[in-house]
Image (cartoon, rainbow, N blue to C red; front, side, top):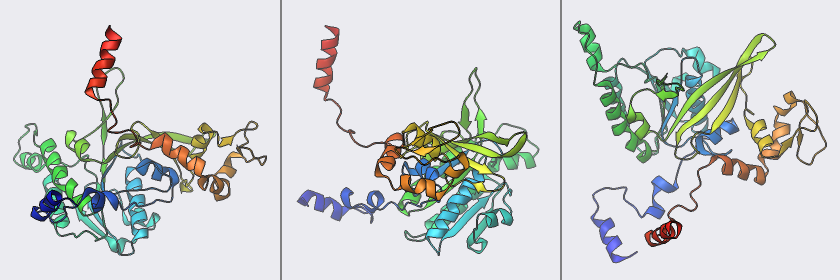
Length: 352
């Protein structure tokens, strides 16, 4: 260590200051792996990756499985840490205990906090986070931020006023501006359920509600789409599409399908078949049949939803590398841009 670097480190007033290569905030990411490989891909770009500390947002219209995704991540976190606690901020009260039970969540380890306005969650979450130490196993879920009013809006209604509320976006930005640094510093994952609305125009796209604050602060934002799954005329489930709106780990605009049936719940093998076909790892030797590349054994579509079918591929390094190449943001080449002199030379060459 150089003398100057040693001097700077000695003089700092911030206790967690460290040499970057030794920093626990960059080198000790606590990934929470889920039982569904393609959800791990959506979260991290890797089949065996998962949820990292920080702010994750699931946004979409009503009845788009947003809370279920959040509870699935909470269950995975609790499975990894036997002492884990879920801090559940609830503004919609649409998740009864039976919903938690269906995911196998021990509700005796869930602290349920009802909230009625943004200021409430801002003050309470900061109070909670300020008293959490790195190493405490806490996961925070907010269900949801989308319809949560500001205190001013509530007070205006009580006073009989009908003026527009111009403070809500500012309060949301303030909430996430304060909370976000603590999530990484204290290794806390926070899952926020949010709503979307359609922008105006000929080809409207989904916009995450709440203003820019949540966009700036979030590590990843997923907009959930939905398609019906039918057996003849009968609705048997839904195909939910995880659209990667923002991510620090996965290529934005990636689309990851997750299948959910009314009988079986979330399919563990969702999305893998299409990816494997796109990469040439699974082929269709004849209509309605599937095979591993280079293998003679054939499988019907239902037979591809099994551990026996996928285990060989999930252990295949080439397939795993293909997944990462397809979805994960690559850090290679960053910082290797052309020097300004080179850019000027190229520009002059093309214009001369």
